[in-house]
Length: 130
Figure 1 (cartoon, rainbow, N blue to C red):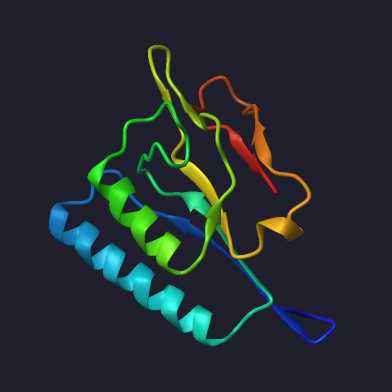
Figure 2 (cartoon, rainbow, N blue to C red; figure 1 turned 30 degrees about the vertical axis):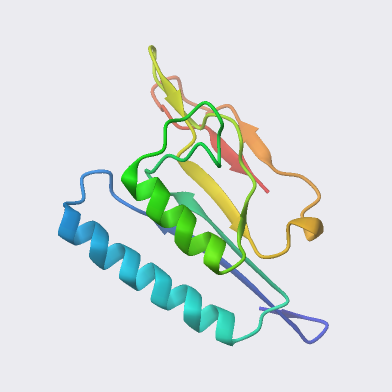
């Protein structure tokens, strides 16, 4: 998408929590390759949101960093992306975590982001707001 001749790239992502180690490695390689391609386009802003099914204390201080979270955090940091969501998005009766994320290359251009309650009592995920 272009706005006033500036490239704006928005994308969504879902990573299955049941990926094997090999499947996660493939996901990570593809994710890093895609970020490299997008970065080479030199967009004015790039934003990716989705269900990453990974945890990092860098994203939500009360989460314990998983191996997947560590690796996703390393790749997104390398490309200068900032994660905006800092509160739990996946809420169960006995636990909660921040696994639904918004990364952006220009956090200064985002006016508001956060988490909204789900419309269904049966859904464990909250809505992302950007």
